[in-house]
Amino acid sequence: MPRHLLCNTLKWAGVRMRSPATTRLGIKAPLFPNWSAAIITAMLIALSGAIGGAAHAEDANISNRRNAERTSFTNDEIKDGFFKIAFGAELQLGRRLARIRKFDEPVRVFVFDQADPKRRVEIAAVIDDIRARVDHLDVAMTDDIQAANLVVVLVRQRDLNRTISSVYGRDKAKQILRSLDHPQCLSGFGKDRHYRIRHAEVILPVDASDFTFYDCAYEELLQALGPINDDSSVPWTMFNDDVQMGFFDVYDQYLLNILYDPRIRPGMTKEEVGKLLPEILPTVREWIANTNAVRGANASGSSSAGLGARCNCPPGVQGDPVTLE
Image (cartoon, rainbow, N blue to C red; front, top):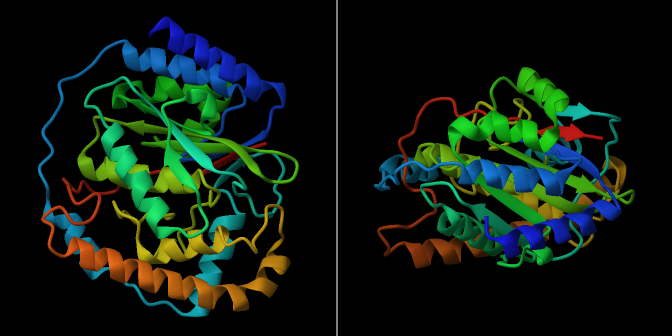
């Protein structure tokens, strides 16, 4: 690791550790109490070796899934999913508090991309896609780790468990791995006492199949923004271990646009959110209809339309969200 980058990382770590925040994990995710030092360790693991890069051939399976997805939902279906995904946590190590958790400041994403194949470009494309589809969310890539409040660590699959241990500590890592049954990717965030997310982390396997990578990338990056729960009773969301997408589906666009509507504030209860939804949903519906219509028209003439359209489509990509208090 270049000495100046290590120094910057340590300096940034000190800033974060001066006022530790409650951390929530999502697995395809978890949460990091000693986050900065753990990120350094994860980067060193990634640097310890590399595998040959693989060519990425586009596959029609993701496009077929996109074409077959359900895009029309009732208000009750949207509300039900929002309450289940935005307020819960699949694995929570600590007190259970049903409150809204979200960023209330610009989100800047830094990527440690030291393993092969290189995937920073793909992460940047996913971030661009999320920014274009979620109103009122200021999210962008940064090359300055000191400016970042969301860090993505890209590692090899064989180093994933070792990275989890370095990030969460051996005891918590054992609990996570035991409870979540071999997660393929992870995400987590730390919040302050006002339920504002102050930092978030995502761990992704760079040498997984393209479908697994995109499925993990979208789910973990979105969960790091606040909707940390997985729920098998909501069949239309990617936040369900039985559902794999590989792209930002319409149903989850509803969930994220509700969450980042300015009227939804960190710390709100279900009752408070429920009172606002009747006035928020029409605005969200209009945004999603217009955004998808415009992007669909722009992509119609492109052979690479739609992020994540490369796929080997293995069955049962698995990930689970975790909350650590």
